[in-house]
Length: 87
Image (cartoon, rainbow, N blue to C red; front, side, top):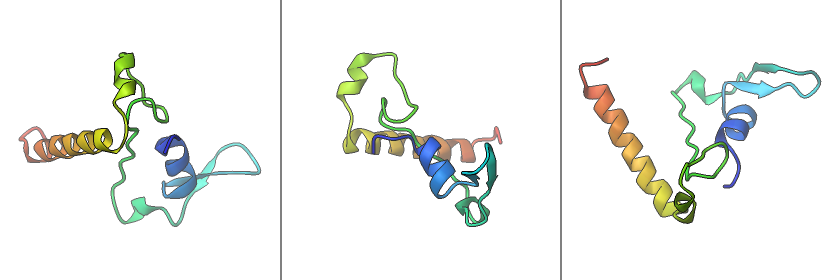
């Protein structure tokens, strides 16, 4: 909580790449989850990590409930896209 899942989760924990600590750049993470599953990193609620909002009032409505509502909406959107004829 409070840090970027993209910057830390993707690059230091379970993502496809790791940061090379001796030189600049990345290397392949042979233990990455993307070898067995698709990954989607969420930056929520607004103001956490690299996520942002154009309305300062959004920063007052944060926490687990907001993140839960956002995640449910995202799952519904993904399900609708999967079942649409656009793919």
